[in-house]
Amino acid sequence: MLNLGGNCGALIIYTGRDLHGREIEISRDDEERRTHSAVRERQVRDGVFHSAVYPDLEAGLYTVWWDDRTPAGAISVTGGSIAEFVWPTSSPPGAG
Image (cartoon, rainbow, N blue to C red):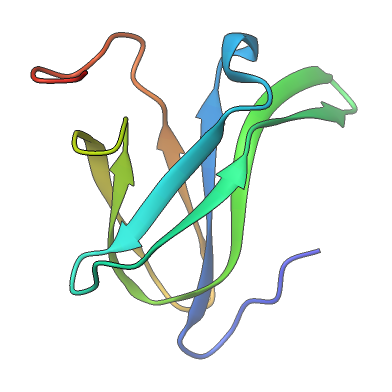
């Protein structure tokens, strides 16, 4: 269950099963502080998928981190909705 509304949104990062258990960090673009969530297996009616879920995020632009210093991409979170990001299948340039 996700709490959405006002200036509060959520983010789901979809990954492959190879990342099960890995912690993926995100940070709001105007902050250095990062938060993380573990990739978990999610069972749904049509099968299984893997994702990391970030509830209760303040609306804004977020960086998704590949590793400690390399961004995997950016995503905009809007209040009252769920943003979705697909984890890249290959490492970005400069990844360690």
